[in-house]
Length: 113
Length: 113
Image (cartoon, rainbow over all chains, first blue to last red; front, side):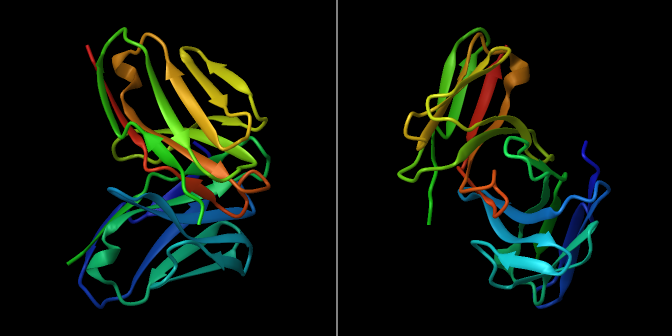
């Protein structure tokens, strides 16, 4: 385990409410990512970060925002949750070496009712 | 938008049989990674292939990167129940995936004892 913790692991929220998911790493890696995983779609990139306060959009960024005020924390916020955002969300880190791949957290299962 | 097509989507075979999973794209990737995911957990990196034509072996698993770096395959010899899981391929554009990975939709593999 590369020291990635996602919280919460499970959450049920109501449509229209804001939700923040947290990803915490203990190894000070520069690159962090948020993906969502849905049946029939696989893993899709939401946002990623390449340093403190440096973030960029991924393939499915609409309705999501992120913040990275410290190297170890990467937050994903759903400003106003919708049922289409019901999904499993994964955080990942990349060590920056070509063959090292990504290390994923255990995921957050979010249900929007 | 780059796409990775995985086939088959589902595969259920008996213990001891051999199988091959394919990952195809019309796009060229700088590297291609294979992950395995178990229920309730994040994907775990199995291997990264970087050079066209490269073959890597991991015990009973053999990974190949196509000469044109557009496709890859995963071959499992003498499958065991412990090989059961979701297998994902993922392509990197540059820098090993610093700006994100493109994932295939996955192959659900069940090995029956």
